[in-house]
Amino acid sequence: MQKTEVYSWRVDAELKSALEVAARAERMSVSKLLDRIAAEWLRREGESTDPEKERRIRAQAMRYLGSIRGKDPARAREASRRVTSLLHRKHARNRAD
Image (cartoon, rainbow, N blue to C red; front, top):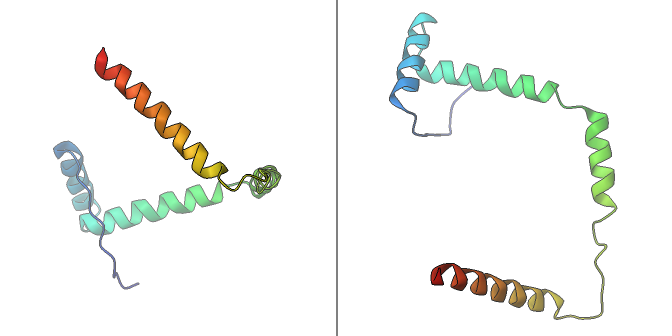
């Protein structure tokens, strides 16, 4: 499989050192070791999903999709204004303390 994507992240020195030691012990690069670790984890997690549980979760969620109805076209705008107002009051109180 050809690698075309780049992903990077910061790790602490101990973890980096441990990865390098493990890669040397396996006679492979750190990159290949991380590929193997990630692929094994994804396979294991994918196998552990329960299709029946997923179906039940979806069925429950679908009961609520589209259930908020009303005749007020400004409802979302008003809700946004109220939330913004509450946040301003909360943070103003915190600054005053």
